[in-house]
Length: 282
Image (cartoon, rainbow, N blue to C red; front, side, top):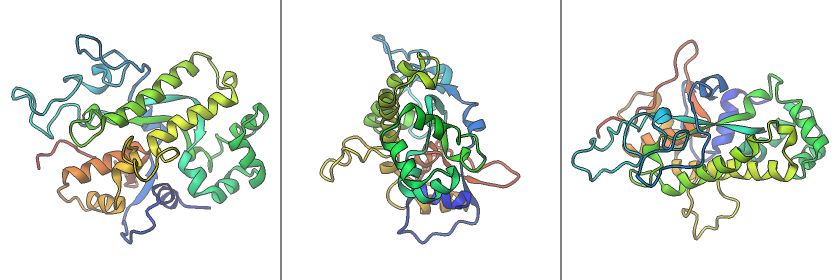
């Protein structure tokens, strides 16, 4: 069975890099994500330009500041010192799910963890039935499966997804589509009341934010950039720079933020994980 660091490396899928980290990688604990503000509405800003409460630019979640950043505003904050560059949110998923990347890059390990035969697991994931979904869900609280279960998804700070400062409004749209679908499914009151087709749709929406390679051709790969597209190339080099405490370029800061939003971070046993500060003047 893979170690926590090996799991993270499999999810990152950076097989071409030879960078070695001294510290371990880990999946961001659910307990840490649960402390963040909850995004529950797909609405963003009203007609007056004010952030909608509970939305993707909500000031109660992401802190004070303009709903949309504007680097050209002479009276506004300096670039890279924006007050909403380091504030995160979370989306509580209506149906917990195995991390989409784990299904692609560590399928054999997942079979070992769930103790579900390979052919049975493949059928459950591709054509979920109530019985199959219930069978998989019974494994979610097992110690060796729990780290791979997404119950909540981290939401990048507004500054990094408003289409202005190295982020992309398209990534914000992927978040919005996910929140909109998830909100409808949450109204059911229980994962058991979500149909197999709806569960697949939710999985695809989460997958789009993380990877978004299902319907993207090479020619328009950057039309709707996902988190994984925004840390390419060489994510391990970015993590190594963070580990060494080097001054980070804006591009490296962005990569690290997207890696964390993907659910992966450096871990310091017995201490706090290194902070990703996206407010350092360059």
